[in-house]
Length: 152
Image 1 (cartoon, rainbow, N blue to C red):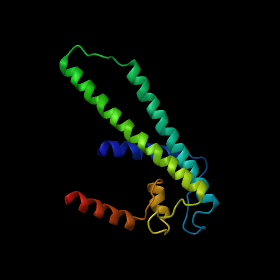
Image 2: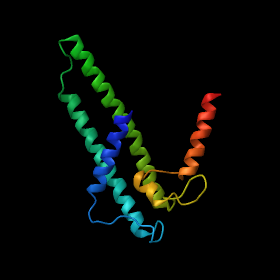
Image 3: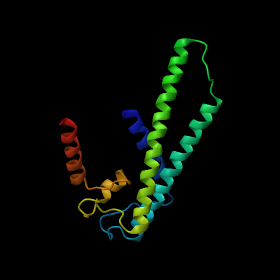
């Protein structure tokens, strides 16, 4: 799980680096003004493009790779590797749906505001997690409620 999250962070960092220009949203400008929305729109599109590119590489590897290893241990190892890779791609498929949802929120004018409280999510959180839909406080409360309902 940690390496999957690490891969996700690496892909997002790569998307950030590929954005043209040096602009980074700052607190001293209007919150979710045109420049910030444009930045997040471009970041989300680049992130999605990076994920789709990685997925295409996985698909090509699956098509090119050997279907059966002669040695049982090699076969088990290969199957485990493919299983992890496919789970990672499934997680990224779900991430693409969240990116698309964030893009819709930008278009509708709701991006950057908590879906629970309506308060600004904050630039730091959005830069770290552009698909965030809740403030840190609302997210923590949500996770506490989830944990309590699981423990019952």
